[in-house]
Amino acid sequence: MRKHFNTLDTVKIMLSYPDIMYQCIERMDRVNDKHIDESVLAATVRQFAQPLESAERERLFSTFDTKNLQHANVVSDIDKRKEGRFLLFQESVLLLFRLCEASLYQEVTDARLRSRIASLWDVRDRLMSASFTEQDPDYTELTDDIMEQFGSLLAMLRNNILAMQRIGEKLENITADASKSPEAFPQYRQSMFEQTSHLFERHIKPTLTFLDPAARLTGDGINHANLFDTIKQIRAEYLVNDKHTIADQILRYSISFASIFQPVQKVERQVDHFLRKTRTGMLQYNAMEANYQKLKKRYEATQTSNLRHRFMEHEDFTTSSGFVPGLKQQVRPQAYQFGDSVSYYENIFSEIELRLSQLATSQTSIFTGESSKDNQAGKQLERAELLYQWLEDQPFRPTEDMIATLHYRLNDWLEGYHFPDLLTAIIRLNHKTGWDYELTTTNRFAYIAIDNDAFLYRRRKLVDAGLTQGEPADHEQ
Image 1 (cartoon, rainbow, N blue to C red):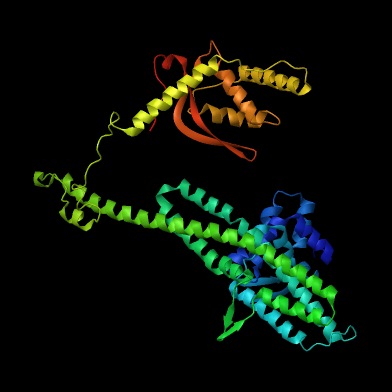
Image 2 (image 1 turned 135 degrees about the horizontal axis):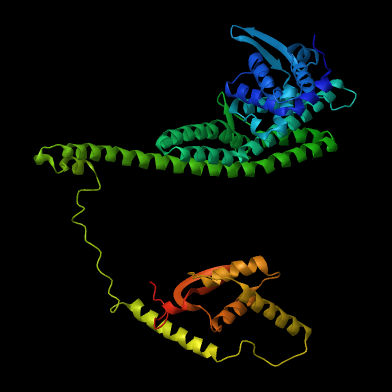
């Protein structure tokens, strides 16, 4: 006969091996049942007990023994079916494990939300005829019931917000599985689309409607108050009867419910975008696959020994394809004439101005102005020397945008990085001699953001010095 533990010890040991209950609850949710199969629980316990020492193994077996679970009031009932015995765990025990594992949160359904709001309508109607005296037990019990409903509803919604925000991880996992098997990608995508659509229609949208302050709930041809209107009506009853403490507490609940709406709305937009994108991709894939099969069938007909069929028959295919008729009648793009283009001459003049400004800059010292003993100037000089030394130690390679490269490196390395540091680095590299590279300015523009400011600049390419001898700067269109 195995040892029996009390409720506290039983729950402690169960929490020491939480994966056992995690797997059982996950299976229970997957088959949409409120009971856990006793044989499944026993097999899971044996799996986790196998690497344990004999004493700890026996302790684990005793904990998850059905009689011990009943004795500790962890299991409330046993359902005997043809398939075997099924255990009904206490809801509080299941909630404890769901609290420890966010992936086990049960999604909020439209039926559960309607049941919650209907219960709030009921207590609101009962509150209108209450006495509002502390000596009346009916009033105090009703107030406790209202607060308990608000608290449990808020906890349920917050738990599901965490589960909803992890939907991105689920979609990434499904996509990763699909990428491992390209042959089964259409089936993976179809399954992913169906699962996400179900989650969107049955869980996310009802929650968003439930938390929408502007929503109107209808039923039996009657417009009912939404969650926030119901809370407002309940709070008004307490205010009228000078119960300001309870009214303030209800107001805090209302603010908490309002703060949940925005995260749910963000998840709803992400999932809706994913569904639209996936549906478009499926339509495009189906269209390409259908036309590919048609062409493949015609191509296989040319692989016979009959020379009269060495070309594909395309008349019916081109007629049925909407993009083929009239394709040859389309005017081909004309060649771009550089010499007759206005932008060509604008680029020439822009390049001349750029070269002249570079010549003027090369005749100016990097540091201008009178010498000073000001401490700030000394710090700037030290900062520049530190920056010069850093540039000497930096490895560079040819790049299309040297300014952006320096910007990101300086932003990660230099404390208090600001725009003059970037200018100092560019000027230093521009005047550097005996270097294997050369900076060339292009006519393409880009921008960088430093603090709260954005700076527009011409891109500078870093190229091998041997490749730029005798070549002008780029004229990119």
